[in-house]
Image 1 (cartoon, one colour):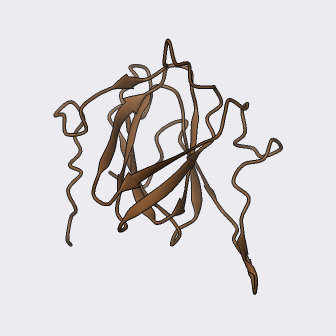
Image 2 (cartoon, one colour; image 1 turned 135 degrees about the vertical axis):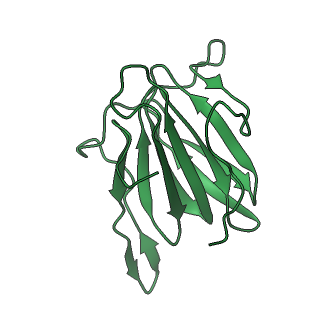
Length: 155
């Protein structure tokens, strides 16, 4: 897999500010270099060892942050003219590694819950969800079309 990022995938380490009351961290601001435009904010959960994926968008850019628990987020580039076509990126994000991962249009992505009982994920996409014509193109999470095995690897 390597450490090079798929073209258009960006990662922002989140600065956690703790004090005796708790903690705070900014996720995405309109003056942030990663910000493109605002579509909506939504929250989703994923249960332990459940995979939500694969899918990609033709227009939408996703900005994922795991705010409770941990997930393994994976991206795969199938864009025909991309210099990183065929490349995989894998990120473990959440309470133990607070970061925002931005996935551009055309890149398949999905995530797996790796904490018990669930993980809570916030997404700030740059497009609102269109209920009648969703910009979402799906594959089975265990398809052979993407060379990735969601099973845990004990090294």
